[in-house]
Length: 377
Image (cartoon, rainbow, N blue to C red; front, side, top):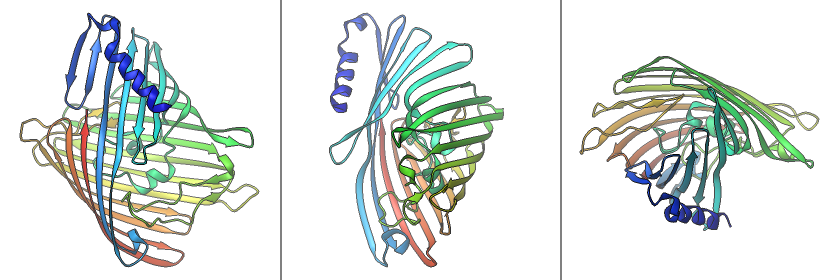
């Protein structure tokens, strides 16, 4: 049904008579756009194909090798704006198993001075890495601690606003069923950029999230060591509890072709009457350098992907260290990577990941190689 709705929406955009006298344009990496005097509609998406190869207990669960490939993301969206005040977006993701899930489905009202009201399914405001699009993050995968604590996209209502110098957003969200009632969650994020020029950015941020737990369990504590197709995870399974709360701190700096960012997260699952409290803690630090001289763009509290200046494309190298401690277990992953941006639409990434974990008192380590081919349209 969702697939049919998306297809109808796309067909409507392409065939709508209202755009017979409008202006149509297409740009590599930015989709297809149709504009009239008071209406703008866009169609676009992304394809990400990954190949993962790994060896060792930290990735395969045994002292052996493994490999796999997948269509990590295949998304198409339709977004629109009517007049100055109303906009919206619907985005679907096509999975390898033939199913389709709804990634975004929201309406936004911007008629109040400096304030946007968003209703529907959209990303909760928590974390720099999480709120940076998957097509724009430097590494192939987000870090363990981000995946463990960031709520992601959910149905809800939020208020937010800002500019490159300062942003804020707070929202209330539906996190599932809790005894016949909504497991309500709250998330908020504030960022500031004391330096925000074309050539230099200093970014600082703070986020907080809390939620009742649907089914009195938290299933995101188990995490792979930043290789999505690996067999092994660190953690001891779903954690029993009544609620979770977490906060994070963000810092990032870029000057010319150099960029760096780091985040610290601290979360706690309140066991209530069911179990003892469980701590989830972690951080990461990342540095990168664009060999061909481009800068990483910055816009309203997030960074964008590199846009090549010339026909030969852009090359980027980076390194990242991340640490994650779910309860009494712990894991570390060190990633070095190379990105080639052929143009605004095509990117090829190569990541080497060295990981180790201690789970139930048992030490495990391993190495992995990941390749991503990305096309944004």
